[in-house]
Length: 496
Ligand code: SF4
Image (cartoon, rainbow, N blue to C red; front, side, top):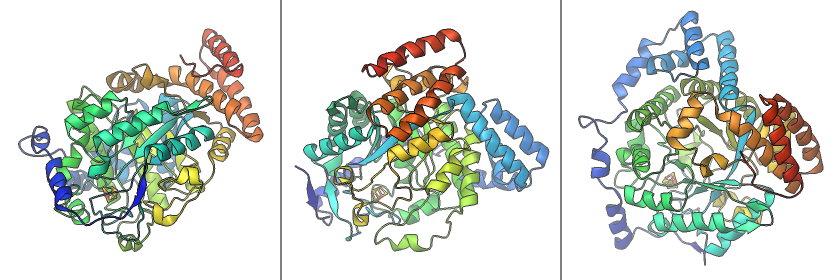
């Protein structure tokens, strides 16, 4: 059974575990001449040398992105220094156009599921940090986990991001068990078809265990790429204090066979231009080492308040809304083929605005308290931070449908092996939506049949009709109509 657990001081046994986590040879093997791919001096040089781009250069860069080519660091640095508001409007428009070209008018939905908040680390900005005595500690037991999954599945979710702190009680075996439970738990027509994981960096052997149970995407955010800031915010002597162990977490994942990996930075910890450059360098290094397979998604969470976390009261590098929109658009243009995740940390208005510069995935109906879905309550002392968009899944889906965006719960690509190198090839060729739009339509119809309110169903069915008409060839339209008819008579999980 799960239980509320008082966070203990670090016992000798836990300390022994902490000391055993980092495998130095699983860092050293990736260094080049002893150095990592984040070269602080080079990043500042790119930023300085491209600090006054003229309009023609910015337009050339936009054109390169529109051709679905990844940008080079000097080009991203130039975008970050654009000061012409008219050009920013062109950048936003290009971001949306690129996203539509690669992914179509569909948005993938997921839900975060916080499984445990035990953590041996002490990150200054985090409500789950070890020294935060105001935090109630909890680790879901199997029955409690099933309850959470049933609550999520009953709302219509098919895709999770399962979140864990770093602690010996929630290591790789625990995570693998919880993924298994997520896939096994069904409610009527509902089930989880894709369990992504956000967890601490692991060694290759542990990552293989997650690969074996069918982990979806493995997310590890570097938080900040600026090493002096990283070392200030993540105390030395903690596992997370090791910058390089975290920096190469996704390289190890690739070696372990987990070929969908996700990067991110926590914006507000340091200068946002440096962080965007860091994300680009990370994407470039993954592409270079793993046959062109860059990050499957990029996340760009902003700092949010958390209970009893004074560091968050006045952060020096807090990001304004206008800066945030610009940095998201810059990431979109810099890595045109990659999924981009916009979360409920942002307000509904901000999400509506920023979604349209090229994001591909959002969450909705989210609850980040441990056990919060079944309890249907959000208590601030149980959360890692405070969410800003608390609308239901149905409300958000309806809003998107009114904006002409179709909700996708599709997970077929993963289950058909369209991951890693294969996915990157079709994404870079702008062909994801030829398969994904029909599958989005089919999963959207499932949602409308099983979970939607009457209002959402009405808007959704009109949109589906329009989307079928937009499919490129008659044969495909007929095929999708045939599959849709089968969904309407009760068949589920149909895809092409
Ligand atoms: S950010 Fe992650 S590693 Fe750091 S204290 Fe919070 S849960 Fe632990």
